[in-house]
Length: 57
Image (cartoon, rainbow, N blue to C red; front, side):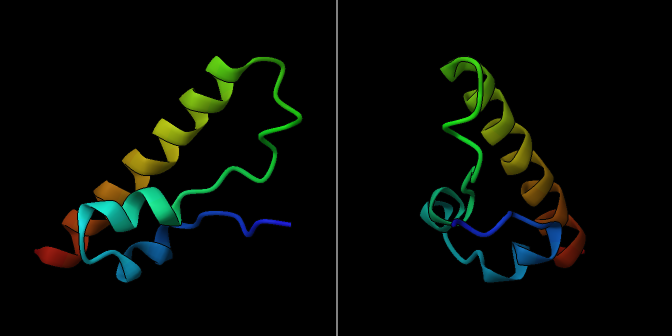
């Protein structure tokens, strides 16, 4: 099973492509349709990006 994405995982991001590799939805097969899974991924990515801004200040 895939590990959940947490805000503290932002320390592992060095390049933009790391963000794509880090964000995984372990419930992707349970979602009712693909658009909800995409929305969830976008939300995880936004949270990680906001954490990156906190680390860089």
